[in-house]
Image 1: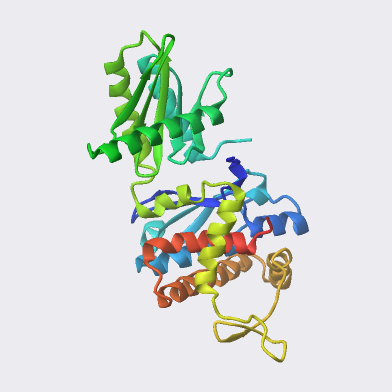
Image 2 (image 1 turned 30 degrees about the vertical axis):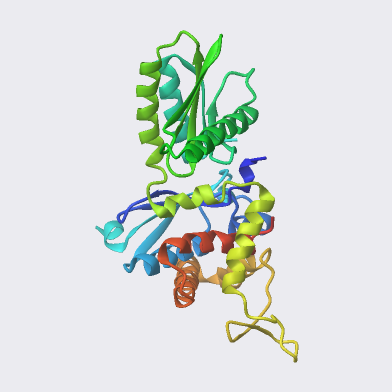
Length: 90
Length: 238
């Protein structure tokens, strides 16, 4: 039987210019929630860095990650938007 | 609970179908009968509907295959009170619609075709297929991840004769996934706003090196996303 929490994460949308990733379980957010309580802003910096590192290596160009929804902030999932470095800067 | 954007978008495609064609129940179902998204009246059990329609479609596909008459494009079942129509929505999913028996079939098929185009765009890229790969029950999902991880951690044993943990030829330390992000934050707290950059760069390096390792093991680029999610499962607690 399908239960939605078995989703761990998936690529919400993908293009060479922007990738959105959703994680429904994120150990970083859970650890922060448990030890520091609810946060005022997205707080999974290691995860957004790791996803940017994953993607940069897969696609061969430097990607930068932002977290726009965060379990540690009280959202139901963490959402990351990753873009090539020059797009954030430009 | 809020739906994820993906589920919202899939439901929106189904709502569009229901609004414009006289369909009163529709669903996106994996080919092995698991419900992905549905827009159903309350008196229809969506999961049973999903399983039954996938079985029905599977039977029709087997019949066509046995008869060597090409592939099944759609299955239409007409009853005294309702019609049920299933059609493929990409390699791994079906779109299923149920309407009143008097509804116009041509219009339903046209609107289903439009809905399929909307649905397919969510997994046209191999990376996006990944989300369907994890759309399985928990045991199946965990086995799927374990098999992936076995491919990259096939180096037995984890502990050498001196009791040291060795992975990928390197001496490793054991940390609790429950504590380590918080511990790391605690250690660098004094850095002020720079902490975000520090943690980000730390993650970036881990993420980049993980992919480097997968590539060095011969894993194709388009499959790496599955390993990334398998790694998340491995680090996580459920």
